[in-house]
Image 1: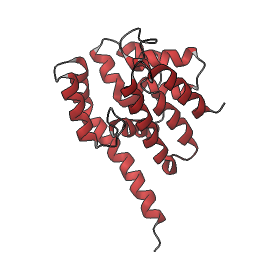
Image 2 (image 1 turned 90 degrees about the vertical axis):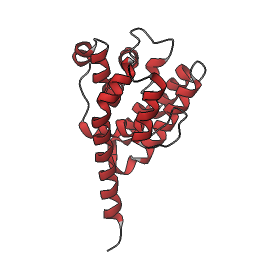
Image 3 (image 1 turned 180 degrees about the vertical axis):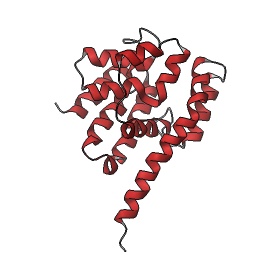
Length: 188
C-alpha cells in the first residue's frame, strides 16, 4: 500500500463517522495539496498524505491532550508513519502558537522538529484555504470563520489571531511560487 492510499484510509477510518465535517475538510485540504504538486516535485505525495492526516488528532479515539496536532502526531509516530509526515501534522498551521496558549509549546518542540519551511508553508496554505466543509476559500475568510466559530477570547480564537500574520505570509509565499511556475510555463 502506498503512502497516500494508507493516509486516506487511516484518516477516513478515524474521522468519517465520528466527525464527518472534519473528514470533508481533510479531503478538501488534500485536494488543495494535489493542486500544488507542480511546485512541490518529489514532495507532492508527502504533502498530500500530511494534508489528509493533519486533523486526525480530533478523532475521539486519539484525543488525549485535547491539542489535536500533538495527539495526531503522537498517534502517527506509534503507527510508524513517515517522520516528515508526522512533523507536518505536529506543526500544521502554526500549531506552536496554539501549543503555547495551552502550555504545551516546549513539549511539542521537544518531541517534533519542524519540517522544511516550503512544505510547512504549503500545508498552511492548503489548510487555510479550505473551509470546514472542504470548499476552497481565502485565508482571510478562513481566519474569520475560525474566530467566529470558536470565539475571539477562546484558546483557538486567541491563537489564530496571533497566527494570522504568519498564515497570510505563508499563503503569499505559496501563491508566489505558483505564479512563478505559471509565468515560466507561458510561451514568450
